[in-house]
Amino acid sequence: MPLGYGLSNSPASAGPLTRLPRLMLCDLNDYPYPSRRRVILGQRGAVATSQHLATLAGMEMFWAGGNAVDAAIATAIALTVVEPTANGIGSDAFALVWDGQLHGLNGSGRSSAHLSLQDYADRSEVPTLGWLSVTVPGAVSAWFQLWQRWGKLPFEQLFAPAIRYAETGFPVSPVTALAWQQQEKVFLPLQDPEFQAFKQTFFAGDRAPRTGETWGSVAFAHTLREIARTGGESFYRGKLAEAIARFSAATGGHLTQSDFAQHQSEWVNPISTPYKNLRLWEIPPNGQGIAALMALNILAGLPIEASDRDSAASFHAQIEAMKLAFADVYGHVGDPDAMQVRVDQLLDPQYARERQALIGDRALPMARTGLPRGGTVYLCTADADLMVSFIQSNYEGFGSGILVPDTGISLHCRAAGFSLEPGHPNQIAPHKRPFHTIIPGFLTEADQPLGPIGVMGAPMQPQGHLQMVVNLANYGMNPQAALDAPRWRFLQGRQILVEGGVGAGVVDGLRDRGHDLQVAPETQFGKGQMILRHQGALVAASDPRSDGLALAY
Image (tube, rainbow, N blue to C red):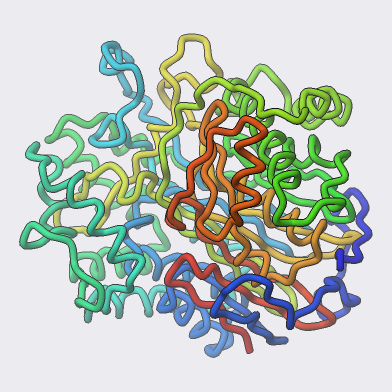
């Protein structure tokens, strides 16, 4: 049955979670899809991540007397070790934190102030490998700023599980091992000097580790200790920043110590839109979270619940709404300082109705988006007073392929999110933030926190947010069922992917509507986590498409 929600426009006035009424109404025993997982229930704290050892790192903080922010940071740090195929010390990060109101943190970095546009002159797009793809990483700063504001345990204590995993090694989990092996063809052929330390660290013996093999890095552990000891200062204004700048100068990079010294994560006001009786919250641009909000605005006036969840009619409406949202987002969104269209214009209900009128019975064409596939980790935590939605990423799996020797610091390739189109708001320029794919999400009901949600996977992320909200609001699914449900993914034009669990009738119906459809493996549809509140309990769920684990106590 559909969820019984009622929402107003702002989450700013809610009290502690312990005083909340029951919020989510759904059947926790209903699992319509062939998942091997059930929801995890608790009252005091919960953690959900894409890797079980990282989940345990967060639980360690709870059991040591920490809060949900401590747990989230420890989990994020641990993920840099145990899921290096998607994130690292050199990642960017974003967070949404509820403490009675919702706060946003933009932990993305800027391009070098010394960047030379001439280096990109003969290119059609920004590369995903090498120094031209690197901007200043913001994750370390985000960890520390979150801890400064809400942390309860000593900052150094949050690093203990990750240091242990790095120093003694850990058995590589199945999905991570598969992703690692798939990257052999990308990184093993690289012969330039800037890539050699990366290959020695992650592809020792010229191969990726297999499932169950132990991997670790003593250098990684030493670097984590240095970051912990200095509160991240070493990474931006100390010896780690010096090491990165030296390696950059020696191997053709633009990043300097002054680029790192100028970095600061930024507190931002979250943006939102109502959908049915829910409200979805996102980080504002330079992220793509606005795409999910725009698609929900377009979808809002369509009675998709009149059709079954697993029907061509429901899928078609969602795909077309997402397609229209992406067309605007890829045309207008970038560093907010360079955008010529305001957020409120993109989220205007009248504009959404105009876009909705374009949806008919046939698939709409749309120009190629041109954005590559991503590499990201999403996690969420909750306790009696705090809820955290956190995401960090290298992009394109391992990132740029650049690892600073003797540090374990692998650098992301977030500059690949820039455009080279002259005059575009996202055109690459010195000291500028690129368009960002990683987006934490959060749901509220009647000014109260329902909880954090997220789905990883570059352009799949807003599409995943849209599908999770529809599953919850239109079709009354519990969190695990919402994650289990077969997904679709819009690519470009009329091209879409659907998961193998989508029924033949839906596939045929979408093709009849003009969609160019392929059935694809589950690795193409992201990996999500969710913690929502249900009748006084925390309900945690983790995507079966990952090595993840949800725990609560």
